[in-house]
Length: 151
Image (cartoon, rainbow, N blue to C red; front, side, top):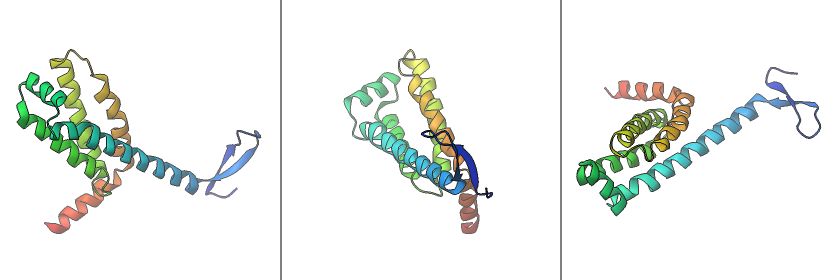
């Protein structure tokens, strides 16, 4: 076997077959990109849009917090910006890290103000954001190079 293949047991026959690590790596990159798109759609549409259009469910929640419409629009804009940045290669890791910080804040607010009614949601979302931040960490170096070139 060459260096670019690894032994894999076939599920149907139980025999060893060679699978190219490049093919496996390609599938992993595609799956990760699919996860990024799914999270970007969720954060952009399901989370940011209700805040940006001042849907009654979002407005009531922010009023109960005492943050009002300014807080609601700010969080909605941050979520929409992060969703877009999650799809831009040079920003993807930074966006995932920003979402982790936002989810930690959402968890704290859920615990402190809403009796932990939906506290599991931000904790669950931290896991895929952490995976994206780690897997796409090389984009942080690219972003830093771009910023240094412009300075």
